Image 1 (cartoon, helix red, strand yellow):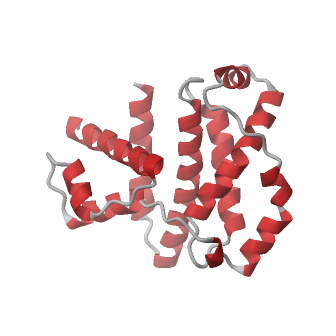
Image 2 (tube, helix red, strand yellow):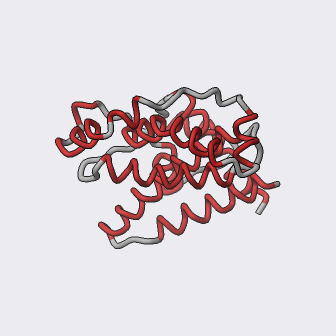
Image 3 (cartoon, rainbow, N blue to C red):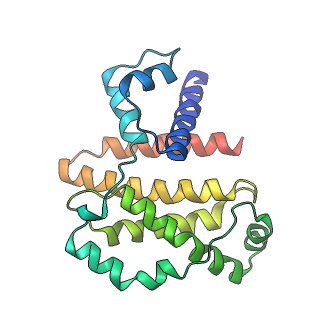
Length: 196
């Protein structure tokens, strides 16, 4: 059990590094990151899928996606940039301040859009990904542990919500729910680690 927790923590660190640096990792780099563990092909593929952050060029967006962006341009453009280290705003939110919630939700919408674009796949509307990311944003805003970790937790919640949605679509397409169950178990284990 201790090995599994170490593996999950290492996986989370790897994901954070990939997200922070927008760095693509090949199989050799992934294996070296998990140097003390033998990874089989299935585990390697699961790690690849978990850390995948495909950036999308606006040229790859469908006409529907471009129309959605145009219709909602003001929503994304009007958002005020916030300082993620402005812990007072997160403190106000933690104490139930509705204005702080509205300010933070608006400020994070461009980030939701960026993450949705990064996860955009053919056949999936950008609007659907933004909608799922917004659900993750709300969960992140309502469930962060401390003001000091709020930004990272909110960003993780947005990514998690979009990834889970894409996994659900893939499972529907392939009729395979085992992937979703594995990811949910991994996320639950990471949440437990976070609480400890």
